[in-house]
Every structure is written in structure tokens, then in C-alpha cells.
Amino acid sequence: MVTINQSIVLIALPDVFRGIHLNPLDPGNTGYLLWMMMGFMVVTAVLVVMFGRLGDMFGRVRMYNLGFAVFSICSVMLSLTWMDGDAGAMWLIGWRIVQGIGGALLFANSTAILTDAFPVRQRGTALGINSIAAIAGSFLGLVIGGVLAPVDWKAIFLVSVPFGVFGTIWAYVKLKDNGVRRRARMDWWGNATFAVGLITLLVGITYGIQPYGTGVMGWGNPWVIAALGGGVLLLALFAWIETRVNEPLFRLSLFRSRAFLAGNVASLLTALGRGGLQFMLIIWLQGIWLPLHGYSFEETPLWAGIYMIPLTVGFLLSAPVSGWLSDRFGPRMFTVGGALVTAASFYALMTLPTDFGYGVFALLILINGVGSGLFSSPNRAEIMNSVPAESRGVGAGMTATFQNSSMVLSIGVFFSLMIAGLSQSLPHTMHDELVAQGVPAAQAEGIAQLPPIAVLFAAFLGYNPFRQLLGGILDRLPDGGAHLTSKEFFPHLIAGPFHQGLVIAFWFAVAACVVAALSSLLTDRVGRGHRAAAHESLGSELAAVSGEAGLAGNELVIPDEEFDARRPAPDATKP
Image 1 (tube, rainbow, N blue to C red):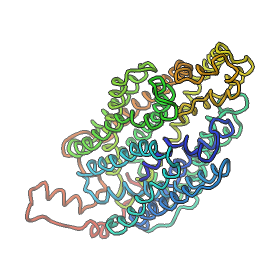
Image 2: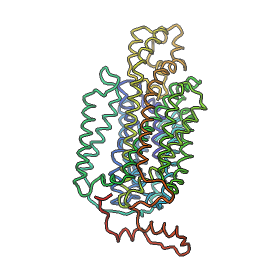
Image 3: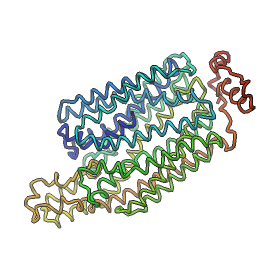
Image 4: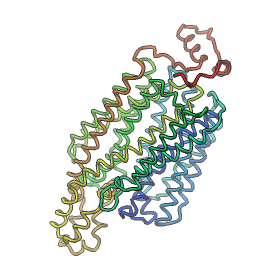
């Protein structure tokens, strides 16, 4: 439900903005566009650790069920939008932010619930199946959004409601909380400094990619500099607080486990590499490739989702298999191999021309999906196996925080690199081409000085920008502006500058994935009979041992809860 919602909004943004009568290409509306995409991710990144901690204290299933309810209520409120313009945009952004609370409740506890429910030797398989659900939702959202949004843009929010109602009831009836609960005081100072610091940092990144003054980006904006610096200082203060309180929000002692530390570093870096990929591919397809192959700008959002199916198929094929195999042979060969395969696919993608042959493109994004799937499930299982039973909620929340934060950071990095590449040659190219088509030099100069991010958003949203930017000038041109508003002019105009930016962005992705592979090498050794984590409950360990010894018919069944209740609490100062 959550991943369908994320991608359905992504693909339906043109219809949403048309529905509230707001021009997304107006520089003043860029902030609305960014917050519609990123507000949900920012809130989720900030809250998952706190909600994971609450799950450890009061029950993970209870928090999970609450997430379904909150998410469903927000979906209804989003569909009730009656306002237009700025007010309508603020209504949507506000409820998307509240909806992020529901998403955080779900994300923070789902991995911990699965980890509680399965013994160590089956967790890779379980988490692989869970990854299938998530990635399938992402794909379905692209297609459903492309179909529903042109009919009624409000339907893209209502589609989540039946899933939410069913999920709330089904989870309440069927899910049993068999995890270890640990009552503790809430770390209010840690929560406050972490939330404010991370929000300030992510908001600074969001505004850093927007134009400021005469600059194409806002990294020189004093407010952005203050937000980035203040966010870093608050997070440093948060880390200091966590070493002083008895019940910290972030259990920094978990990082003493090499598997937890190296696994999270690798997860963060691969998410950085992959996070902007979807945006870059959508811009590539919608702004250049699809129009050049006869698709109108209005129908490119739907077809972009369809042409990206191989990326999803690759993940669906590899994620469960790698999870199952990593349960038997250990995770490291799959995490290292998956990161390197992903890096190789990024390198191959940057060698393609902008007007590529689809067969080669489909093969490369299939390989990219395979690499991501090979890495994902073993990496998550490796991290969760290193976490004590009573800290699985906060451990899963910490991992989710890194991943969600990296998504926002990745968008900032990819767009910054892309804008830097576009700004070098796009203004001059655009000016010369417009003048050559009869546009007066003054108007051509004004259009050429538009921020490159406006051009990217035009491609991303499936708009033909020159029909809107030139307006009445088109009627005074020799051909009535037919060539300027054709399916070929805009793609040919941005193809060269776009490819320059794309190469820069993909080199960053290659570097991130290679470092992730090196980090994965630092985790536990590969070998058959991957051992249970040191913090695995005694009942689960004895059950696994009895199964290996062939005690069929005379199995020793010892409840995990009984041993967890009898043994002393683990020393948080030890790894």
C-alpha cells in the first residue's frame, strides 16, 4: 500500500497539478512540486526510529496496525481536496506529510515483526518475499497512476483506502506480537534533537536544488547554508546526548557490531546510488525517448512506467532467490556481488546514446534490478540478525532512517549533478535554436535563462514546455510554431546537455555502489551453515540445533519468551 502510493503520486503529478489549476513550470511553484514528492519521505525518515522504539516498548503489531489506520484516513482526506491553486497545493502537501506518519509506523515495525516471526535460517527468505511486495507496489503504482490520473486525479489517493481498511482489520485479527517487549523511558531530548536536526538538514537539501537569485541552484543561499550547518550541529548534539542517557533513542552500541555497522553503510550507499535512478530514467523516457518514438507528451507518464517493467522484473527474480540462498551459504557473496552488478549496470547505462535501442536499455535495467535484488534481502537479514531481540524495532527503524534519508539525499545529489551538467550548455543551445526558428531574440534570451530544473520538471511531468512558455508568440511564427511544439524539437534540444549531466550522475552512482561492495566485504565471513547471531534468543538456537541433529519426533520445543524472561538483560555497552 505504501509503495503503491509513493509511485502513484510520482507518475500522476501532471494531472494533480492540472486538477488544482497550478502551473508546475512556474518558478514560484517549484517548491510545491518538490514537497509533493519529498515531504512524505522526509517525515518517514525522521520518525521511523522513534516508532521502532515505541514498538519495542508497547508492541510492534500495535504500532503497525496504527500505521494502517493513519495511512487510510490520510488517503481519504487527500481525495477530499476542493481548493485550487496555492491553497490546494498546501492541503495536499499537509496531508501527505501526515500520511508519512502512517508510513513510518509501517516501515519501522514490519521488518522487526518478520524478524520476530522467523528463525535466523529463514529470515533471508522472509525478507526477500517482503521485498517483492514492496517493489511490486512500486511498479503497480506507476501503472495504476498512469491509468487512473487522466480519468480522475483524486482516485489515485482513494485506491489505497480498501487496502488500508482490509490491512487494519486483518493485521488486528491475525498478527500476533511474539517479540520481546522492553519497557523504558522515552529519550525526549534525543527525539527532539534528532527530529529537528534531520528535518533541517533534509529541508536544506530540498531547497538547495532550487534556483536562488541569479544562480541555477540554491547552495549559496544563506538560509540553505544555515540549514545544512544547523542540521549537522544538531545531529552532532544528538549523538552526544545518546552517549549520556540511560535509554537512548539510537542504540549506538549496535554499531559496535561489525555486521550492523558495515551492513548499514552498504545499505546507505546503494540507496544513494539507486535513489535518483528512477527519476533519471523517467526524465530520460518522458522527456526524450518516448516523444522521439511517436508518443505525445501527455501519454508519456503511463508509458514510462510500462517501459520500466524490466527493472522491476529483475528485482522480483533475484530478491527471493538471493534471500533463500543467503540463508544457506551466508550473505556476503550476494551483498558484494549485487552491489558490483548494480555498479556495472550504471556504467553500461551511461554509454547508451539518448535515443537508444530499447532492447539494450531493457536488458541493462533488468541487470540493474537483478543486482539490487541480490543485495537487498541478504543485506537486511544480515543487519537484523546482528540486533538483540529486544532492540529489533529500534534497529529496523535505524536502518529505515538511513534508507529513507538517503532517498532524499540521493534526489538532491542526482538533481544537483544533472543541473550542473545542463547549465553548462543548455542556455546557449536553447537560445540559438529558438532564434533560428524565428523567435525574437529578447524572448529567446528570457526563455534560455530559465532554471535548468524547470526544464527537468517539464520532462519529468510530461509537459511540452514551449507550447506554454511561448504562448502568443507561436501565432506570429512562420509555421505557427508547429516545429517548436512538435514531438521532436524539445527532445533534440535537451538530449546533448541531458546526457552530459546523466554521465556525471551515473559516475556518482557507480562510485557509491563500489564503496558499498567494499563495505559488505567487512561483514561476517561466507560459509555454509551461517551461524545464528549472538543475540538470537536461546529458544530459537536450541530449536535450530535440534532440527539439525535430526530429532524429528522428539523435538525439544522451548518458547523464546521463557528464555528471554529468565536470562538477564544484555549489557548495552558490549557488541
